[in-house]
Image (tube, rainbow, N blue to C red; front, side, top):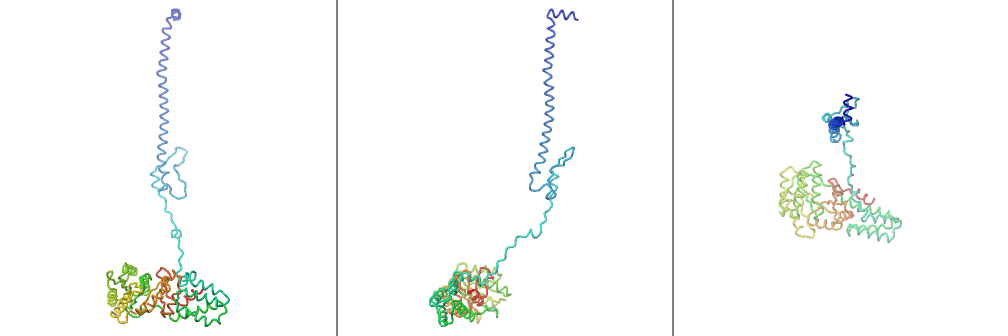
Length: 421
């Protein structure tokens, strides 16, 4: 063998065997060795992929639970949310279905926390509150300043007269007051004495003419309501009906204002609010006919009081005043002695014009009493003094606010005290 190798080396034949053998081995190495590496790499990548997929699956199961804000995934408020249980081995994750089955316990609130905050009760309006504008922006603010003077001289008397003439009391009432002041001037030592004197004179006039709102003495008692447009006549009728119902009486309303647009509908609304009957006719119908039918209807039914609305007649239109006389006459035919009360409704804002209206209506029909509306919105509260003095009529009620209960009985003493306070 050795001799053959030596022989081959000498001849160069050995290279023909060795070189191809080496090349063949290298070829095998090149072909098969990378495949094993690739196979091993693929095997390693497969394990990694499995871990990645498992991680993604875990996140897919956890994320919907964390983002769900509609139903918190916990039993009791205040406990920390556990997304999975931690154990040494293995790590166990929980599923979304198990979380959804656990509903939060209801939160119980006390009555104190569930109730709405209590709003402060608004105090009821009074004659005093209704006279605020008259005292602060009307003639009384000037009078109070004048009464602070310690000397009663000619200047004080002249200024007093000027202030009273702007108080919407009327010329006759102011002249009467100034005559009394001049006659008693020697008794006054200060402005406060003048104040007390005027206060008592006005009180005497109001008390002398005062009467409480009439009571229901027979069935039906008929109230004829008169006054100009805008005085609040229809609204006053609705509020009166409410007051009668509160007293256990059964009221009926008659829509005699057939000329003003929507007047009938307005009265019907009040009828619905008070759950009482409203007698009406079409727009433009004869108001005397409506009043006549209303009285007959009230007689045939168990009605305690009939409130008859009328058109807001301007006092300078003679034909409308004549129509009011006709209504008054027709009511008397349907029920002798009716109307039992004829009440004029006056807007305090009209001032001296209200006094003129009251005079004109009193000449057409026998006015028995007055209701003053919107006293809280006027600085002309002095009109009550003039009406009482010149017409000798009682003021039954005064409106000092928008609410039904703000239509209050007139108290002369309360009025005077509030006015001069």
